[in-house]
Image (cartoon, rainbow, N blue to C red; front, top):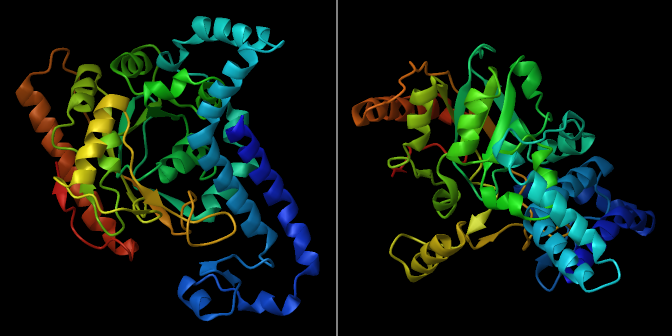
Length: 382
């Protein structure tokens, strides 16, 4: 309940915050600059060393922040808060509500592995355009997709919360359907995400499905053609390496998606998101460190990683769970045609995997000059 209260309080605060502008000195409007370096040199609200956002920000930017807050808070808190609410209602006179939902969940629990339940209405919410404009996120297409084929898109790097992947593939904020007519995107995520009440329906609306073998094979065999499965290959392990300026991919031992591509003849497509690692700061946790050992043990136990990261807040720039305003450029590479092999050998898998790694590396090298923050070779493909 406390989480629900905090969620509602923050939303209310954000809605009424612009009203305060009426009473705020107008001369401070000119002190704001979109350039963070210029902004640091200007006069702004500072309390106890914490730098607060000017009250006279344009409404457009407030709406962008609100959209990112909605995504971030729902990603982190919606599932647990709804679970807590259900447990609370069990012991109240409204006990029948969670019981009815549990009945629905038992009936519907396999949907996340059987194509999901996307909502084009939700994917086209105006909210998501504000969300993508916050950074902003840019989608770059390098080749056409054939609607008569299926595709597995490997998204790199994972980052902290896959903001670029969601903006480009979980919404129509960047007009994916216009760029790739006849192609239906499906973001693949941890199956555990679909165990939480209400949260599961929320993420399924974006087209999300479980990142399990059963789910992938269902999409590639029973959903027809024209499907694009977006898999964040590095997963939870790679999130622990999401540091600004670094590109450390977990890929060398990730060959399951290659096996499935061969088995079903799905084309492989490398996708690289410049800027995905730049929007949060993470505590240093090199391999072998005490912190990394704890994080690895937690990942093994929980099934997801626990990066200790820092961003900004809704109304101040020093601390918080919101990402920094830094551009994310998502480059969708050229498809690698895959010949269907019902029973691929280890050599078949190894050969295609290396071809994929080479294609991803070439994609990075070709476009790395587009991003100021990351202009170096991929450091480690493990």
